[in-house]
Picture (tube, rainbow, N blue to C red):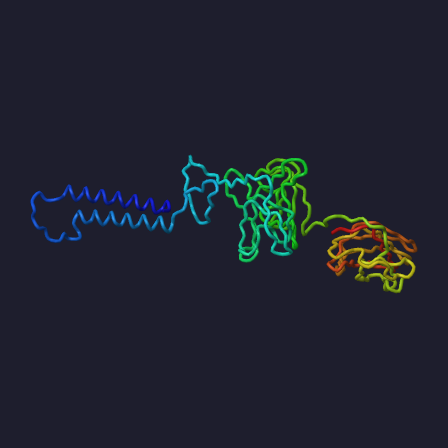
Length: 366
């Protein structure tokens, strides 16, 4: 007999005992025939209630019996809910007490691999490890393969100021968070004002991607703290120094010839060219995505005094000069110049006799 069967039998015996005592207490003192007792009488109501209690208890025990809290070696059943009071235990612990890491069969390639102590996955056929790598056995594994797009989700709305996910690498050689992805390692969703314009407190080490698309790093605690902008749509990005190379020479066949006064020309500066013939020596030294260059601009053989400007490719409006020159004097000037999306600049000559132009590049920003 199972434990549930024994409990049902005990309840039935108790109900029978109570029913007999009720019958004895309410029996008539003389032998008088009684008509059939109506169903709604007090005694029948008690009997029906007792029978219903037995039947309901038996059904509950037979179908829905589950431990309120799993004891050692008992399963933790998905779907069960236990409500604890404020003073009750609020931590669920799965204590894996073996010294070795469990092994599970590989579905692909055979053999075994390290598993996790506790795993949640949305695909029954998968083993308890990440099919792409068995190098990271963990206390908790969350795998979204089919229906679920995310492996682990952490959320907090605590007024005390908490974290959705905490990764702490304690001890020598440990790292708090490891992030890998075929599309991106980490995605930071842009939201809120730029940190220097905020009114809340921040601490050193915070990283913020604001609603304007700028990325910031906090270098000192405070309200709002001290921030450095790392990148964004309006910043040049990181500087890459290169061995100086010639990107344009109007005197070469590929350079387009001498510039006239009051003229402009769109010039590609992405390739390194031979100084002797102007042919491409190394393609794409300035890579796609570059936003600006550090360059030396030379005006060669001008016939009159004048000026020329270097703008982003396609912009022929003169707002400032890049080189001012005198007649019959070769003049150069170093500067930083913005590129268009095609890695081009616009060479614009002011009024005068014009001249030849050479552009040598020493670095770029991405």
